Image (cartoon, rainbow, N blue to C red; front, side):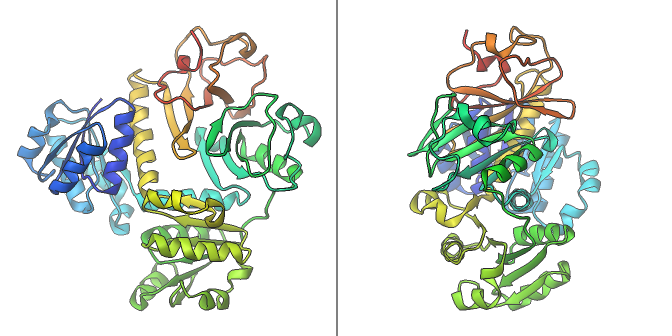
Length: 454
């Protein structure tokens, strides 16, 4: 697809890289010459400087040949104007980044009036990702598929776990007949798509696919199930904190937000009146302890400073908080700290890139360019979980899986048929109308048939 992307900041760059990797032709537009130069140096895109809401600039960027415009500048109004101008120039699909809560509440109206196809908010996407983890506190990461009917959950095998030193083929015999699939294992910075003779070890990072209910049942048997989160401390009153706090309070969870800016504390209290809002420096260990850190079910760091987020998360982890979630804006910090010490890691730019990429895949799927409905990268991008829509007949449809040659670097993790999540065995078949969840360490897969050897 031909895509014009306006805005080359953190979010814009992440989206451009993701879409370029998937074979789309991207033209990036930004006012900042340094960002333009950076975009062309570190990703396979065309780039030009200029105001993306300007008629002439959009024409020069090839908007008349584009299938889609994506506007992700830091200014909501500019993003909406870019999309409006592009729509007037004939682009059929328009995507805008909108961060301001007031605008976001009016999105149904604005989408209709401006002809926007998708409105996304990185901070709200981040809050939704955190909320999924808090609903499943035994996991470090939760990715949802097929409208929540299947999930891929990441967790680490602890010393003394019944999973440690267990061959996969013994999983159901030793620990109960819970239908779920361990579809990927990270060990020593390598990702493996495991077979039945693979032996799990302590400290392995394991990725499991099944329905939420199946995963909960298995976690109880495995002794790694954590009780539901009842009270959460959030460090920082950022936009993500506001969206998350609102969602958690609505779910009946006690929320405490610690914010350094006194005037902002008052604004937070007006937006989330049921939350406890504390004015103070949340990087002060004494304050955290006084505010009940050691009795909190979860601690979430959402300040704008990655170093503060990392340090306070490490402190919370050492104080025994059950679930710790850390927001990182800069990916370089992932390789500088032990991820076990900062819990689950979330990134607004990655959440945004995933939301936009999944929308683009849905368009490609409708045009029969791709079978992919959703794609979630994990293990620092070394592996992918793919959601396929099976809408066309093919050689690999309606054939028992045991008769098919699935690639060594891929695995079919689940088949969604109606409301059922099927963990496939050798006799199971993929049928027309199914949704299939697959995991692979191979990049560039676009079609369901790509999972199989020729």
